[in-house]
Length: 146
Image 1 (cartoon, rainbow, N blue to C red):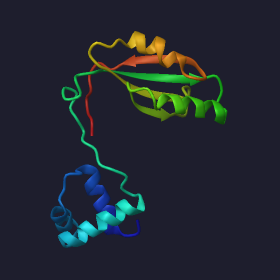
Image 2 (image 1 turned 90 degrees about the horizontal axis):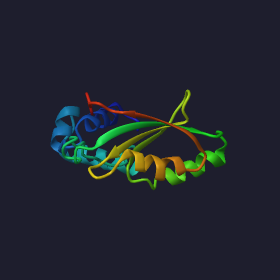
Image 3 (image 1 turned 180 degrees about the horizontal axis):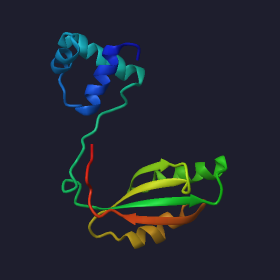
Image 4 (image 1 turned 90 degrees about the vertical axis):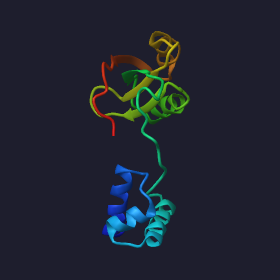
């Protein structure tokens, strides 16, 4: 990414990935075809890695959200790699963040109807390699999602 125009295109798409090439072009002073070419170049360079829809909680099946702090027995490369290799296989884990501070990781877990967090905690999360402590925080209400 080398130009102010490309930075502006990225900012616009990050705010609204539904913008057409014509709308992008108008916003940055390019023709629709030139804007389309710039977006294609940004994809090819890896600056744009994909697009996603931000769904309402109701559209996601109104899941309960639990944020889980995970502490590992140590921070050796092998321990962290083993944990990360397993956590990506957990379908209830929507996001996993490597953290600074007290916890090593923070998980965003979504519990769908018919599931219980107790079962996921006991059968999945507590069995992950290297885990010594889990601290769960239930979300009462989502205030903002962008």
